[in-house]
Length: 608
Ligand code: M6R
View 1 (spheres, rainbow, N blue to C red):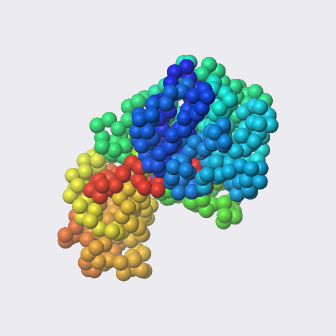
View 2 (view 1 turned 135 degrees about the vertical axis):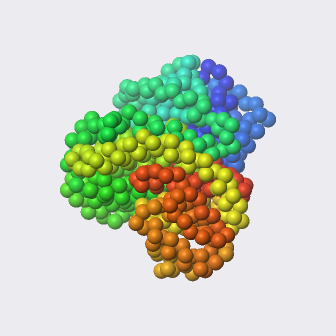
View 3 (view 1 turned 30 degrees about the vertical axis):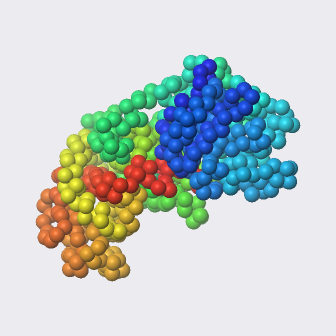
């Protein structure tokens, strides 16, 4: 959470820093701030609320500077307020921005108070400014001060700092929170996400844990954990401005929903050939490792976890492998037993989710055969720290609610199920059938997007309610859960999901005319049973909205029966999720919520 950006340039940096904050606003948006070096003083502006409010202050005050740091916040310690907003300062001399969490902040704070430092915020971050001030006085070098501070700090951090004594250099440090440098012309930048500075450069250096870097407009020096000079590779990435702007869409979420046919093509293209999946698409040697796999463990959070729950079913039916799925935040705490030849799979859009990363790191101490990530960001920590990977190629996902990331994760996980089956010499005919269905998938998703008009009809009936129930059975239960998550996250309507057979064991008590029930009824052996469950709802006055196979017919009274496009059964979880995304979006639109940046949430959850 939180986004930091810093720049040392031969031109004024105020505007470019604020523009970078706008691009990173998905990381947190409860307050923002900036510190700009002005030779004899440092301009320090902060605002509660979105980055636009900081920009308004900048427009009014017009501070000029060639060296600065800025921050957009997602509150962890202390409410959103101007005093808790970054940058934090120590004695008007050292200013810092921080993304991450300092775990030992209580004891460090007490030590610093004894040393005479005063605190004006409730954050865990302010002490970093005081530590740097203390050690700068001792060492007369911000790089050395940062190393001394690092010895004290426990936790995750990306830090950028400036000092009143130096109007040309700034110092940054990284430990378990993303941080990269951008090499521009006559300027060097640092940011939490390349998106923040993609308009200024295509050349990035991804810092490693333990790195400290000193940056000026002309040059940069990177030092590693042992304080030795480090040569880090420059990575060239083209991030088009089209990918990071809304275009004619009202929200990023809307744009990302309608991008899904193209996004899925990009996940699948070049990874299947003829009637099978290609070898080694998860990395060199992956096909050989897959031949040894006897069990699969998935860890992920939120929407990515739902993708994992769908995939567990595929691994079982296509690759004939047992699979366990855990919330990444819970996995370490259940003392998991690891069977021989187990493969650990992480799933993540951002590749920076702290709980998922922590689970991966924990797994390294256990006896796993190998680790693999399905991830959308090739430069992310998960991508770097896993043995194998498959990038979903969905392009930047900016809306906090995950849409195209989910769909492409499912396509990637299907490729994995096929690869595991192929390496284990299983089900060639079924593999051929699924490969064919994957080729048709973008077209089928495009057809499902045409259900928008039907969702527009349903949306007002959900938007005026306070609760909603989603039902699915089997592989559709995680899709029901994803539908409920999407609705609650962007419309703030309380939504739950149940396997339809569980209804009569408790939740049926909730059914009345104020409880809309959204059900998924694909044609399968379970459809018949699900329809009986829905009759139980109808008999109690509940209104039914059913996404169903064209062969399913039932009287839904005042509700709606929506017939879905026909497709291979293995593709149905992906396709049935599409109208649920549109429904949530249209409901949220009617309720007037902040769809791309829902309250209390942030896109990239880099704290445990
Ligand atoms: O970047 P990740 O996929 O690891 O993020 C995991 C969750 O935080 C994320 O899916 C979250 O649940 C979304 N906001 C849901 O729309």
